[in-house]
Amino acid sequence: RRHPLRPFTLPTSVAVVFINDANTADALIDQHLGDYSQAVSFDIEWSRNTPRKDKLHDMSIPNRDPNYQIPRLITIATPYVVLVIDMVALGQVLPQGVKDILTDGDIPKVGSNIIVDTTLVLRFYGLPVYNAVDLSHAYRVLHPYIESGPLTVGVEGIESLLRKLFRLLIDKGERRSNWAQPVLTRQQIDYAAADAYAGILIYGAVAPLLAASRSPHFTRSTYSFNMALVVDGRILPEGAAASGRDIHAWGVNHDIKTNWEPSHAVLDGYGLPVYT
Image 1 (cartoon, helix red, strand yellow):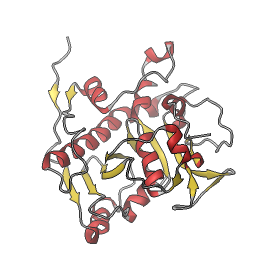
Image 2 (cartoon, one colour; image 1 turned 90 degrees about the horizontal axis):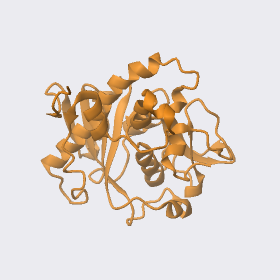
Image 3 (cartoon, one colour; image 1 turned 90 degrees about the vertical axis):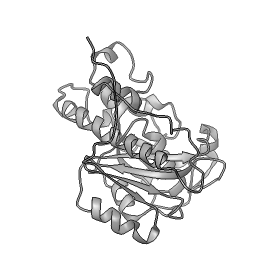
Image 4 (cartoon, helix red, strand yellow; image 1 turned 180 degrees about the vertical axis):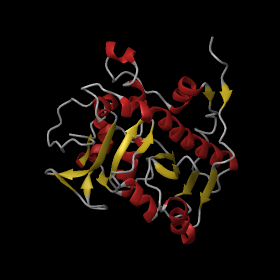
């Protein structure tokens, strides 16, 4: 008999730091994450719609077309603290501490369907992201039912993973709220913090199982990837002028491929032609 679902709430031991002042952003990030080198949960709340695949391919990069996703909150969570960063208040200038975390291949950035967030970072800011871990696929490769079907069926969201792993129910009511309004509500900030913290909680449950896997077909690249602008096999530096067709994603520990052959459980599962 299953236990009933319990509401998910942020533990009182976890600090939530709201950052909306460019003058103090770097100092606060360094204070809370400067010496931290373990996995972080990474999430973005945005306004507007995600560009279609063909539109993304035809875009110049970096691209801040106001008709498409505008990052509002970048949220980074550890088991001890959640940083909720208002990018509109910061003039859409990424703090150096955030850049350092996203581009550090030794720090896993975890999230469900995280390729949407990494693509937004690359399109909007021109910044690569290394070692992004998809919690949905990480969970599914550990369960035997997937052996009878492809890994590319469906996505396990944060809500689903919390329910299956912990019998917890997260309130997602604020997800579709107005992220473009000048001043965010306390409910929006609390939602973003809880959503990001849920990611690191899920990773804490899944990571030991990933490490213990003995499958000959199971490696880090089974559930994690890098994303950058790549031209002729060469990774372009941050902010370099490029196009959406130059967005490449490849499995961690894999070589960059100039001609993509469908063979990667995570990336093929997204069905997005943002890698070649």
